[in-house]
Amino acid sequence: MSIAAINERLLRSIGVGVAILRFSDLKFYYVNPAFEDWFGDPVTSEVITGIIEDIRDEARSALRENGSFAGEVRIKPKRRTLVIALSLTLTEVDGEEMIVAECQNITRMRELEQMIDTYSTMVERNTRELEREKERVEKLLLNLMPRSVYEEFKTFGVVTPQLYKNVSVVMLDFVGFTAFAEKTDPTVTLSELNDIFTAFDRITEQFGCERIKTIGDAYLGVSGMPEAAPDHATVVANCAIRFLRYLERRNQSHQYKWEARIGLGTGAVVGSVVGIQKYVYDVFGPAVNMAARLQVAAKPMQIVAPESMKFDLIDAFQISDLGAHDIKGLGEMPLISVSGHMPTSSPTTRF
Image 1 (tube, rainbow, N blue to C red):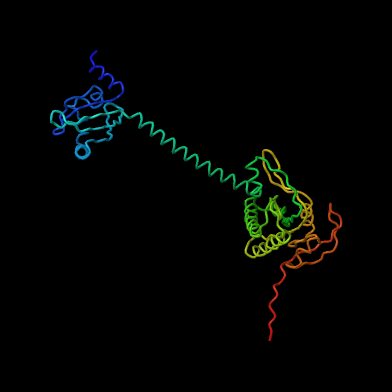
Image 2: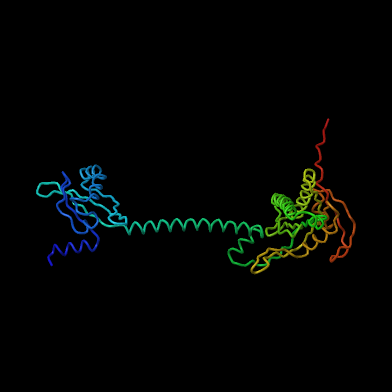
């Protein structure tokens, strides 16, 4: 086998087509078999004619300026569309300008690039969906537990139970809720609770109180955990007053009238995530029990607190002594009621 035949076979096996044509009239002098496989006979091929018509001016200009031209053409010799990388080089043979055309089938490469682009787009879309899902999960967990607890849970996968010694608790429960729920459409009941509890959440956030949970119609918030708060008693009292004030104003413009009893408690609590498969952040301890018991002892639209909170509240709130009451599980306790803020004193006018 001659050297020329070996070169032809080598060029064909690696998918390179070669042609030589005159620059002046684009007459072909040589084509190898790979070139003919793609483009056909250069004398009669309509494919070559169409390509020349498409790139003639651009290619001539590039060859004159730079001596070379590179581009891609798409042909459809049979059923499948091929992408051919075309490289033209201007040279001189025996004083005549000639063009050497090198062609390579890059169809598979372009298909792979398209597949990669499609896959990248899919990965980006899935990544965005995962980020949105992550944000939804984070938002849900932050509704179930304080942020610092969530950060610990996210980092270590567990939450260490913590004892908080100086905490105040506010516990609210609605008057006559069971009867209301029995005679009212469940959708209406849920809508009313969502509306009210959303307002309560805004109030607790405003004063730096942490809403721990709702249990049916009960609402539980704490101050002094997980971050310590020296004014924790004042915080829960402010929240309790705003709760009742919100209900009073709401009742003036809504069909359904709501009344609530509120108990305040102070002391120690333990906070931790409870459960393995279903995570719930909960608090329990003396302060929680006290708030729950005093809420039961309160009258409608009344805030009841232990006398031990009187010293912390008396300067900012209107306090009334309720005397000693026998509280289930806690024995006899002196109680107070918190009915509002102390009026702001006006400056004395001097003559």
